[in-house]
Image (cartoon, rainbow, N blue to C red; front, side):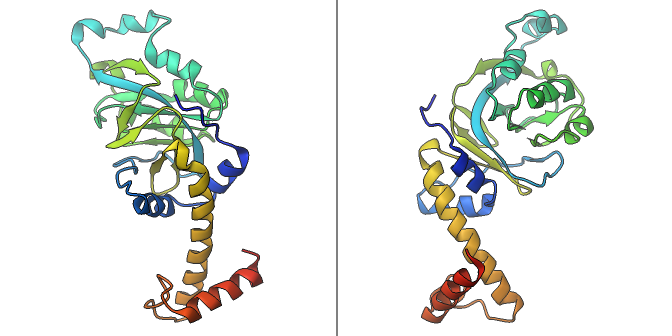
Length: 241
């Protein structure tokens, strides 16, 4: 697990930037597959989900190992993940992009929220999705799914590198989720991307105002004209951005 600790200043900045801006910043650094594919908010929240990753890996279930009695085991990895994911972290689950059986349900996710965790993400599904959507804590999944995880998945590894929706997730990476989906920011890039994307968001707000005022896009976005750059600097001073 990385030694990186997500600071309050970086967390606050990331709560205000979009996954689209982060994707662009990562693309500039040669990282093209950090957006978790086919994962959506159970219910969109007003504020971004931001937190470091605590991971759970599922493998295909083998019938003789995954009877309902396994939940009596106090060391069952799914239950342990709910109790060990640190406050302020996001529980991220590799469910093999298979939503035919649930990765978790509302009781477990409610416990995670009560413990102060920042969110939960799976590339599979959730059962009791309506109840999960009523929580203040953000939750992301592929789609609702009623069957228990034991039907297809065995919870196997905790806090190891995983794939979630084709994105690599290492323990301690920073997850940012908005209404579009979830992006995985490598921990060592989190602080600089928070700063860079804060500036990108400011510029895009300026561009949108210009477009709404009737300005053509060529030379404006990207800012290839000197007059655009001068106009943006004036806009920043005027708006305190």
